[in-house]
Length: 500
Image (cartoon, rainbow, N blue to C red):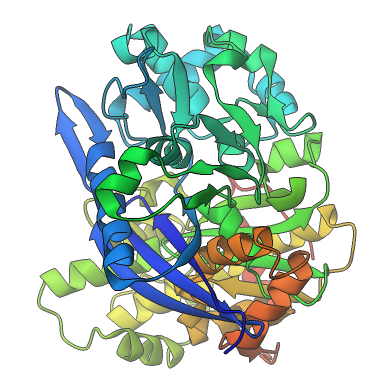
């Protein structure tokens, strides 16, 4: 192989993290996982925290491993989940482990902010971000209201990937895609909104300088070099919000596509050059998150495989047999379609004590047949998800400046062939499923682009398409999806109606 280059991706999720070396040679990318570890929450004093020091230790461990194996890396890129942040003191030290978005102090913070500080319309018109109680804006409001000492004494506030980059380089920056999740940023100016910051008594100086994917953040500090055995390796800004990295790696051929990042949560959207902040996007609660090259990830969060995962866990704990993923998909495929459907985004499915009973109760209350067997319940879940995807896909076509002829499904859910085919049928669109590991691919490929090994995003995507295994699903069902969709809308009155 010629011109071989190695890049280290640190990919941290809300439940686990992993590190990957991506080797770029002869226009192809090879991925090798080095480590995988759990990301634990700490409950203490009525609050829930992330263990930033444990994550730092895991990062140090992989850097030592890279040095021990003699893997010459060109750069390091870090991506994480959104919204959470770390407070840094005047002396440059972390003031306290960061609060987690699951902390109960956020439960009523959003309502309190919107009742006493600003209106939903005003906040959305500035930020274009959908309303979730754990957004950084509402976390900061809760901390300020409670007199949080870390916030009171913070010289800098760094979102999670920026905090880890700071620990490695000593440079305090704010990467654009992760900043966009905070609901403090104005996507038109590509920087924090003075008005939003003032609403929680903060100024722009509290945050690091804004950087964009491809920019060098800094190099490993002398201390990190001594602790790990590595040299002055640069840390490069990737799309540090994991969703943005995944979208950057969608193997699309042209701009005529939508994406569905399918996992416990599903994120369905399109890539726009400019934010779409309109009365219609507000009514439908779409979000405008930052993407690479200043683009907008215009998307909607959908409760994805959560219902299925919870039911499967419940059945396993009850000792029910025949629960392999393949067995459940085959059984669901043999069931009659649309016998019963649910709104997967209904609040009753957020965290019920029994997901099976929650699904059955929903069907009972909406005067439908009640699914009893594991196969019937799985069929109900998959039918419902496909119909919800149809609804959101129809809305996306309203906002897209170009026709959409392909839906790319990425993430763990891209391996669900039954749901992929149902989605193609429901949306009447070609579905291309895969790759599964788009976040890490996007992280590594953006580092490769920063190193000059690939050109624009379309060359990145061509490279990923050529080196990834994907499946294609064409619409083929003769089942009446329109009639099923009308039933879905009828039993989901809280959802705005879409027409296709």
